[in-house]
Length: 442
Image (cartoon, rainbow, N blue to C red):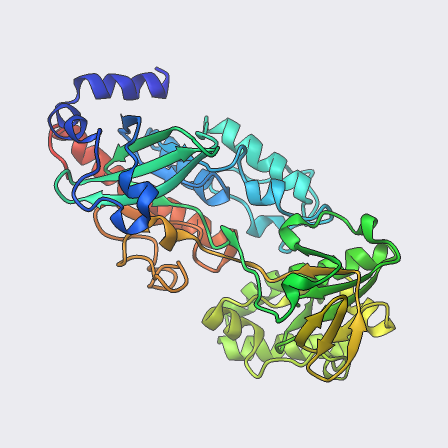
């Protein structure tokens, strides 16, 4: 049976929906979404739909992974996606030359490996094709162009109510109701824009990396890239390869490691060493090899943090730069390193070291952040400060009353896969229990 037909049948015959949910669909429950703004508080959902399985918010790799693990256990889910495609970050907001920074075996989703003919580091296009095949294999059909503006647990109904709005100024509002809510919007839901004096008055082009596709449009231009993470470094390399004149702002200390060491991936080597040695020892080994291969990076304006790369990642979530050729361009002088920005005036940028230079373009490689606090009314599982689970991996995947999180582990797709399997197993246990007592909410 088509899953939506099944849902409509459930709405018509389920005593839980008849007795509890339907009378409340036309107006919010007391206090529902009042803290989320006037629009969410006043607007009434035009439709209310009972969802027998979990509601999954987000159709990125994390949302797809949970949906697939549930499907394997015979449980359909409703995947809500604000964009018009799966993996919208990868498809719509990444540069053309992007590829996976880790070998493919560390980036597989549960239950389906990458095709055997894929390279070690699949390209952006190959990764998207893999995700589309993944969704097709498990029959995952997200509801697109549907933004969750507010989600809250209704204590009276003992159900989650997710109010959504269709794309557009006057988009239709629909409320979905379920026993389970899976937050899969991830760590990269919204762009982060830095506060720089004079940035808004810059006379050239300003863009975030989410809008950057290729350096082809910037040949001969002086481009300032703000941010020295993996994206900033790779955008600089791309600009250099397209005959632009890139400069990169390095404000904080940064770990740069070769993407491969001793004939294997740096990440794979790290994982193998961690089986036998403590983190601080593995960090010392990695830094020793990196210094042998790259030399001392400090004279080039790339000071290393006092904490090792793996320990720093664990403590702060800051990922080391896995070099794919940028460092050689920095050494040759094709990419120039600059200190933090003091202020901008017209096209002139003044740096903290008093240097003053003109630029045609500024690219903000300043990253992303979670947007969970803007729409989820829960303060137990997620922190209001950064929108991430309060408990670190592996304990941040489950909240109270059927609330789950996936894709917030700061451990990439490996962490996603672990949490997706846990969530599916946990819901399966409740699903089986509800099957024995279908008229009882658990």
